[in-house]
Image (cartoon, rainbow, N blue to C red):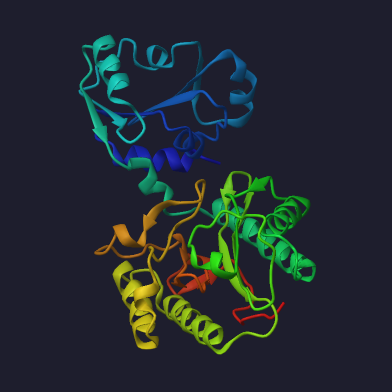
Length: 350
């Protein structure tokens, strides 16, 4: 299942290079191993996993494309006797002290810190990954749909959060993808609000940002509702964000620049007069992590690749009044995108 991922990495390596993988999410991506202690050494023509005796059976069951070494000192298992002219290490994962210890223990090896080698590969999903993310998104939106009838005046943010998260698990999620955001009334103007005991009141905007996790893969969705009849300003605010989000979805496609999608959303919010209230990035990749490459704000000049899974989540937040965010997780295609979080874009009255 994962051999093609290792091959993709090997194609990135020169003949005299190896990559010492210590980020456990990257280890899982490359070889399937999900234990809490492991490291992987990938050269141009080999891949070796090192872990300890607790995971001897698990590693054998989960992997099929790598040699497995069992012991306590993982770096010694993988690097002893090596004389690679360039041993690449994951600079974002290894500490300065750990790198210095590696150099001292392996004087014949030249170590070089790298940035995002495996993460770049992870940004383009294979079919098995797309299926898991799609399933996680389906569970998420079904759970929201099932929870809506239980939302009423007097229910607290925390109680609503618990109802939604429990429903995702009942529908088959292994876990929640992240701590759900349930924000009502003026709290909805806080982009990443932590649910409180505040009870829902008539006239509140209700922002719900949530997701399920299935076999390690995440989903991400946000919708904003209103308790009772909306005020004119709430209708206008919701329409502005919904139109901006649609402009992003209409624009996104493979070979389109990230900046072009952002510009489309920003132009829409500028036309409606709410651009100054959009205070965060437009979106991020979704996969084995809830926030992973690519990020709109970090890839202004790049073009979007096919099978990139990314969120589109504009918002507008009016301090002390309320805010709206609408977010989908989409898989980018050459024709546009597949929207994995199918749910109404209307301002639903609860």
